[in-house]
Amino acid sequence: MRPGASRTEVGGDHDGALVVRVSARAVDGKATEAALRALAAALQVRPADVRLVHGATSRTKVVEIAGFDSTEAIERLRGASSR
Image (cartoon, rainbow, N blue to C red; front, side, top):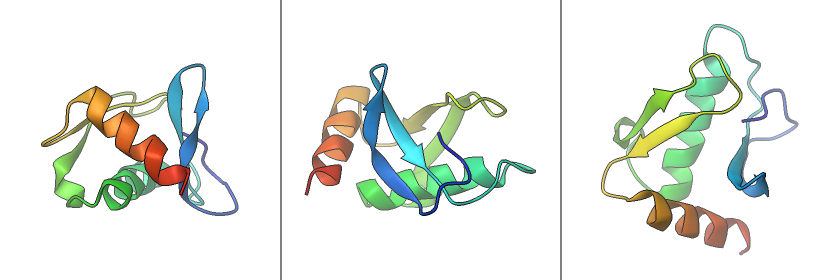
């Protein structure tokens, strides 16, 4: 996750991880909330279907997305960013 970006976007790759850029600052969990909402929007699922599993205070996050296995979610997100 990259907080404080000029715009919110899902896509890109860094050391094998998907990059989520958010305009929200990393204050009081606002950037994490924005990242989870951005993932939900990119996958066209409800925000409640995206759950933070690990990394609340870290730039590296592990999330669970209801109805997706990790490979399917990553492929779909990477495909969406190349359109």
